[in-house]
Length: 202
Image (cartoon, rainbow, N blue to C red; front, side):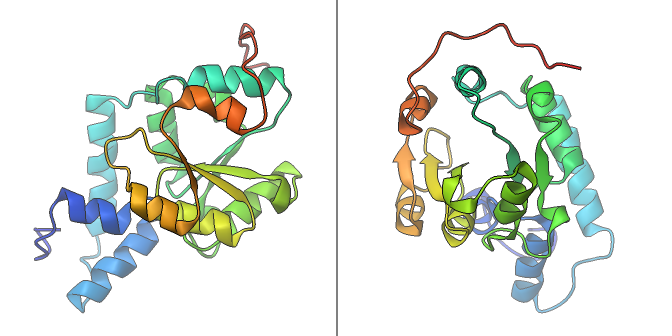
């Protein structure tokens, strides 16, 4: 942002961009600048972001593996519906050791006309998974994502255990807040079940 002439710090960038697609972020930046970003700006940013993820690693949220075990034992379908591109998810989920558990059920904002906070992505994911919107629960950490889930007519839970959680913004957007993944199964009406030995299948 500073290279473009915008003096936004990390906190301001997080507030403006967290949970949004690259396309949406570019629109925000260009509106602020009053001019287009350079032609290669998004590609360079994307490459630098993936390089940083590969170099630094992306740890899994503590407790998420046990949550997935519980969902699988209860035969509850789940997926990822992210503003990020599939290539980015491959790096982040791979670094976190979760790629095999999601690779067959990934949905990106690149698949729909409008990214979050519009409901398009969540509605697309629900349709592809064969689920009615009203039967879906969204687990989010970004205000834009909460707004998208609410607009889609879904129940939205917001995880606020991360470093950049905007508790007030997430709650105001319509989410139920929780700060420990160990609580998620009960919030979904599931008791924690013994973890099965995980196999990604054929």
